[in-house]
Image (cartoon, rainbow, N blue to C red; front, top):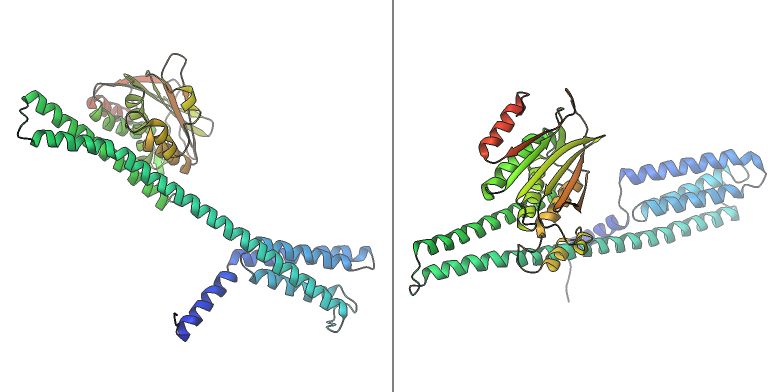
Length: 398
């Protein structure tokens, strides 16, 4: 049997009271506003007839609202006491005097108190059940994420270990070309693991402070330039076209996260869509900046397109164990980044073949100069990217 000290028992009672009767200024405001409105309504309706029973009904409704929309029992009980005192003082004869001996007062107080206790109990129970449901959902998503990440990490790690064991085996005699192939495989799989870790770090960053994004006014072409530069280091054989608006455009965004979105979408186009060309386009649509990533690949099967925005585990399970067969963490991350920016994301197959992913980000401030005619840039190497950023900064175009 566990024995608690007096101080521990007092602390336990204090914690329980804090749970049952939490104090916060929002709930205080609700109490004051609802009781004030109930009093005003009672006084306005008082001249209508001699019967003052309407006041009791109004205050019962007020107590019900306070108990429903505040936390714990404290404010519901306070509302019932306030209502009983106000009804006794302003709505029972003799008016504007306290008549505590009146039987109707005790009945009114008992009714209001019972309403507050029952409503507070039901509301507290519902909120506790909702919190339990939300926490269970979080645990499910967390478990799904861990299982799926392990699912996706196993393949490249197995490949790296296999290549290393093959090279360390003294019985194997590889030619320089074969050794180069094995080392290239290790490098490729290692780079993929790094990108997976970067995605995980981005998710951790958003989960830790989703409502405190490091937003600043950014020119989309600068973010695109960074994303394309990183992309072409890993996929130098892929042609990238960038379509930018002639008018100057600035978008409030977390540049690092949006760059991650663009990179993941381009990578998906190559790895999953087997594309040879990727086209990035930015345009302004009323109060939104629209980013589009199109490719000339194989597209997405229609049955998978409809289920594309499920959680990460569902994507992984539908794609199988090969990282080249599922969109996995990268696409789920893109969706979440766009969502926390206040935007939306969608995907569709193109008639001419390939896929288009597009997302929108809200505009707060923008500056426009000149016409709205678009220019197309074909980026084939890092020099083109530097040229894009340098000339754009000086108002020049290819």
